Image (cartoon, rainbow, N blue to C red):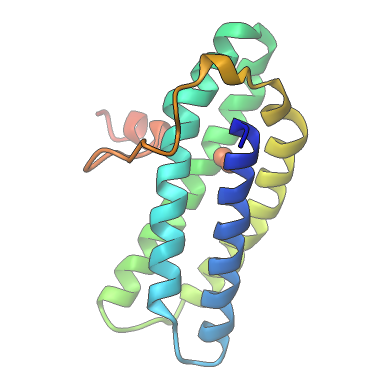
Length: 151
Ligand SMILES: [Fe+2]
Ligand SMILES: [Fe+2]
């Protein structure tokens, strides 16, 4: 499988889990397992993009800096929305989580389409390590939030 196919498979899996979580949320019986699978998938995916894929593209193409910075802003928005849902579900109330889930779906639809059309086709597979074996380090957070928190 090419790197692009692997990343797009992540997008598809994330979408599936997110839809399951949203449907259950709208029925008032939140499928926490689906949501947690979505969360671990997308956090690892963002890690791979920000630490492996994007730096290589910026190295190869100087005009990629702008678009990638926009994508990293969106990662931060997604990351914060996920955190809010996790906080709410941990406290046993899911008052605003349905709205947050909708927001995540809305951002991801545009974000993933843009990556598929403009970013992934530029990846040079031979420069990227085996992704299947990569897992996100404990405590890693996305670049933009790390910068905001001064880490
Ligand atoms: Fe992304
Ligand atoms: Fe992606």
